[in-house]
Image (cartoon, rainbow, N blue to C red; front, side, top):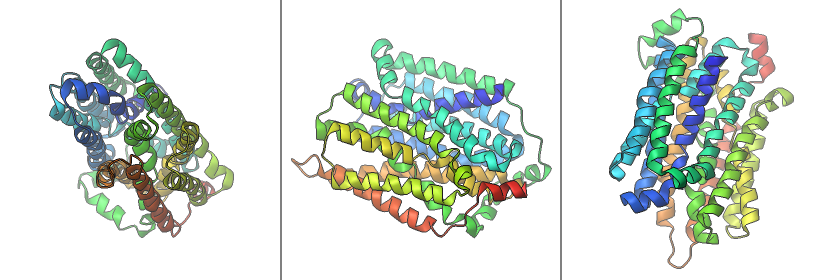
Length: 403
């Protein structure tokens, strides 16, 4: 339990690092001259680095186990990236620090999922992953108003230096407290062939309809919470930093609550597919509402953001759905492949939505660009949901019978 607690703290840090940048935008702009484009690139670079590292993490989990994989990456790259951020002389260093930090955070969740998949009943996988996500999303909460308050009180460099040191200590704790599951000799042997297992996984046609929704279900919530809520509220509602912090705090709490809500639903309804369809359909309706009514009131907008946050938290459910079709000896690479699509989709969307907003700006009309953004999100979620309808269900009861 102590080892899983250390990994959970590491995941809180991972959630924090992917979302804190928005609240430091004014300070980084004034002190380092960072532009919105550079900060958007830094945010997207974290996700891309995190996603690409999944292939390395997957092989390492199968070959070396979760303890060494997560401890090394979090301490060296995660902590090192945070310390580099604290010392950054300019925007280029911020971008590089986010790349390094993204690589460092890439293994903590997957190490936990690997342990869950190897240790617990498959039927319990959704609730274990979802509740870990819910706990970890507290890092998203800390990265909103609390981070803004800490940076105001102690300076952003001091806060980031302290976080870097804490991240290194967390990596050391993982090294000493985590216990690897019993070694799988076939997995270790297959891991010796590097990335070949990923080619085998991509040949599993049963996974194909699941991957688009896995890639996109989290993207609107992550993009709005981490990147677009601030500019949208400021441009459309003339919101100040305090109000933006409050709205994004509510959305962060909703994302955490959503993971708790999704956790037991597949067991309760005896289906994973239709729970995912229902939840993401409600989220799609909320995005469509924003697209057709981009100007209302702060209260209504906050409520819609909360709904998007709750419904966009189906990550644990989709991970369990895809994991049900992955061979046991490819567990490490299976969960990291699914995670690559999830985080990679969110990262790519950070870049794409930046282009969408930039191309849709209408002089004198602050609403047009954001309306186009919400339409873009809605179309992609609708398409991914349509593809997902073709997938095969994997109810927990079926997995329990196999176990």
